[in-house]
Image (cartoon, rainbow, N blue to C red; front, side):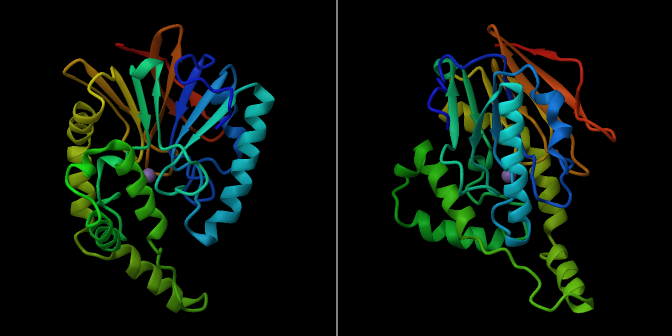
Length: 278
Ligand SMILES: [Mn+2]
């Protein structure tokens, strides 16, 4: 993180984006210049995890190259980029969360809401085994600590070994890929269950760990939402991927807004900003 970044008094306008998944073939951000309208005019841009694909070798090279381009575009428009970790990029960013404006705004990728990281993932069984092994080293009381929970989640993400086709490219490799994607068979149910419970899981976590945060901004589940409950707002900025929708949060002069992002065929275009109660 840039040493000039002051969480209590960040340069504004400050914008928050998430889940660009640079390097993934299904990312809508195949060219960084498409993001220009989202970056222009901002002084600080928080990239809230899963910015680029670090875990899969096949995606990492192009993910790294696109991330470097993103940093250059930020510099060009005069915005200071702040990168937070996600479960797809648990290596480069060392910051897992931000408490902004004295804790009024809490920003984190959102994988920490799930001790098993991604309950819908096809690596879920692997993640659960790693989680159980790590958790065994700690007491229940220790596992209530947010900093430790964040660090454990990143460890799980770093230790998961994504299964890639072992066969040479061709029909066998294709069959293996299809099989891996379809397995285990309860995946569709787990995806639907995650989406059905996403807002209540987020609110429960915030109520426990950051009760004073008026606004929490997350990503991770790729399900865009804005939800107000018990005087707190949680915004999930979705994902910039095919079949998903994304939004952007802006903080400026004590006010917060959320805008849906329209990708269309050209540049990403922020829609009408809607106010968020702070
Ligand atoms: Mn994620």
